[in-house]
Image (tube, rainbow, N blue to C red; front, side, top):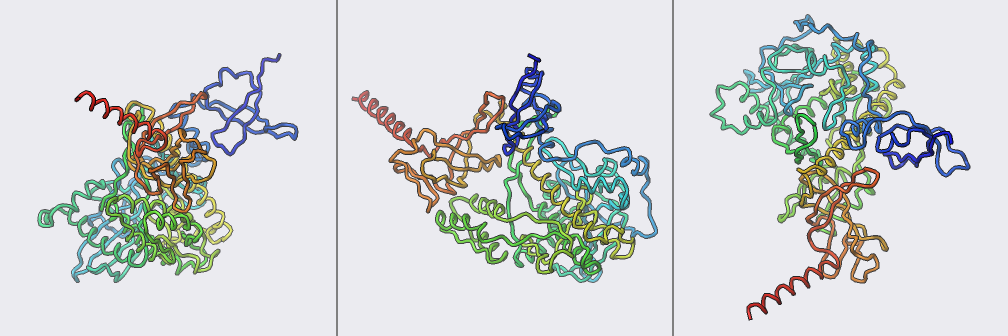
Length: 602
């Protein structure tokens, strides 16, 4: 009688129970994404009670669904406050030589990044020395020159802890004047850097290392494809090109550093990363492809890892209980048990996880000649068996617990991306204090402060990862709902098989081309069908003469089902092998056609 209705609100997060709300705007809110606050849960009510807060927009709209992703993972996306912006230097700030800096502007420094990269954290150089060795430099944006400890900008950066990368936008940890301009090591401009300089032999043995605040002048901001083209050029054709010579030297040394790291037991893992091609106007995806890695990617990765390891050792010598490090614990056997059994029972492959070296060797040897993707698939699944790496304060753990399992490094930290990670900002301050160019901020002498800081960085890092994956899932749905992706048929690989009795037979697959995963349900088969055999020991299901087993290659149709509540669901249907009663129907049809053809000839 008062014009209000009791409505049931269903949250995007399925862990949240349905919430009852009273509203007079029922008709207007239908089909909208809305925010609801939970108020109470009376003992007499089956569901909690709440109230409507605000509407975000229409269900299915890209910008609205992106807002949902940011809200679900609590990603800071509010504009920077006036107090934060007041900490920035003027927009016409001039970068000039300072007394405490080493002038490296004459060196052939260059950066290698994805196309369109605006926040360039790192750059490299490599020059021959008179004694036959090489000087290699990793130059990282000197963010702490602009972000002073304890300032409003520093406090906000610590709160955000990381930049978040979605398919259609980037949410920065720092204001854009720093992120894409003053701190970005763009080509053909002077920039302040924090540099690690090594003298190395031709066999990649380190003779000496130095850490300096520097000023650099990049001679080029290369893309991975451009750097790869330089790597692939014949040696004699590049004699007069400074950039090509630098890239080729870096690549030769990078290969040797990588070989040493892998020999020590570092793992080469994999993930099903994809990249989207977006329409310039609508920003809707027009294509999606698996992300291809080149040797140029490995080149950059190798020197970033070397810099991070080198810096971690330096700050630990000076601050053994106050260093911000990154640890990766060894995986438990229980976490790997299922994968070990699947590899052995389905492909006859042995996986040894006694230490990272044995696991690395196992993965290297896990090859199936008839299917080269199997090895990558095994590496993807191995990654999922491991716990995530964590930031920590060195004083809170024993030295034996500092180890980074995946990299086979006794100590490790993050130094190379201070534009987008606050952990690297902390490490820059530790390193600056260690080499005597700045004093350590007072708050960083507190283990309690560092503990809380690391806990927040771990939470934010994880949230940014999950938000990024949700953004990929959202754009995957949009792609397959559009005409470009309608009812695609693609190869897929079986990841797991449901062998529980009484359930509709189903199995989990991954589609390599699109990096998507989903469950294929064989709904046409009666769970009680006597022809259906479930074999948990061999991770497979059989229907008469057809078997579907973990690691099998199958063909699936990908399409979008629209639900009554305007939700969309990605559906994967099995195309081949034909599995279930329809196999007999197909056989009968073929026999009838063959018989009819035979009669026609007679």
